[in-house]
Length: 391
Image 1 (tube, rainbow, N blue to C red):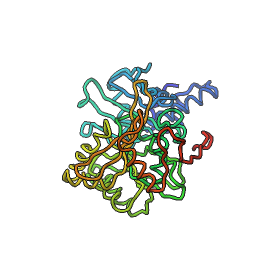
Image 2 (cartoon, rainbow, N blue to C red; image 1 turned 45 degrees about the vertical axis):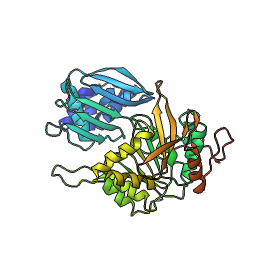
Image 3 (cartoon, rainbow, N blue to C red; image 1 turned 90 degrees about the vertical axis):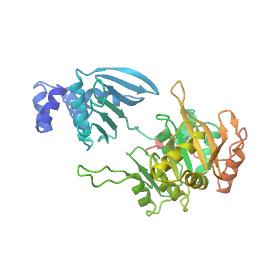
Image 4 (cartoon, one colour; image 1 turned 135 degrees about the horizontal axis):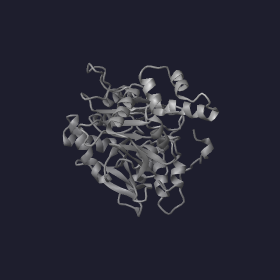
């Protein structure tokens, strides 16, 4: 079975079944035919057999192609893969094919593309130029399953008081931001948190690409859509936030707050839509106000307006970090103080209680949630799901 020959035959318009038959040996047995079918699937899906093998490996979250070399992020650590492309031209061909499979355009006129492959893998590709030394391809793998919050507690992501506080915030229908750098596990944690929402509540998730996968019977997702080649048909995250407000959401969730949609999210959180969640890129909770101001400026909001809206809309900020050994961990939960300018106070850290703990506990209790003091027996009643119960 020659994967490259199979790719060329399909690219020339040959039917996939015929392409497999022509490239497989006449004496091929069952194992060879299974291998042919797997390579065919990998070719049609976009990445090709070599990269598909890496994507399928346990613990791999990202596959990165730099020119002709390939790297993987395995459990938070970067390592070079035993895969090498023959030339930048081969990588360019692969990038263009994957972009087409993802339904997006990649050429000299539009040398940067984002999309999602049929198996859920997230694609980002940059041709040369502007990339120097050859095309760049970034593949973010889709998680095979969602983790429960109990599993994240056991692996140390949100242990002890952090777990109790998160459950309390869910019960109290607090509006919360998840902050952290890229690759810290914000999406994984948010999916687990949303799985704790009462089954009788409706969750509407708004994302750039589908990444959130909560185990919940009434969670729906809407994703933004770019404009077509005529520059028409764009549906932005802000458009989707406004649409979601008319869809009777019990929980409004924004996968990533990164632009002008911050105005609509703050408006939604300030107009009776409680229990909302969103993620934001920030190095520490103390940096979140500045990030919100920067995003608000994209929507034409004055700094003072952003501060006032955020102070009224947000209850807490949960911060996630990736440790040197690759572990992801909730390192701080902060509360948002009312007033202008916007300020956040640490409520819980890995070292214990912070000055904002009393405010956090009061917010949780006021909303009907429960939160014990660190060191006391937890008051939150948690139903532990076994891995077999997780979809």
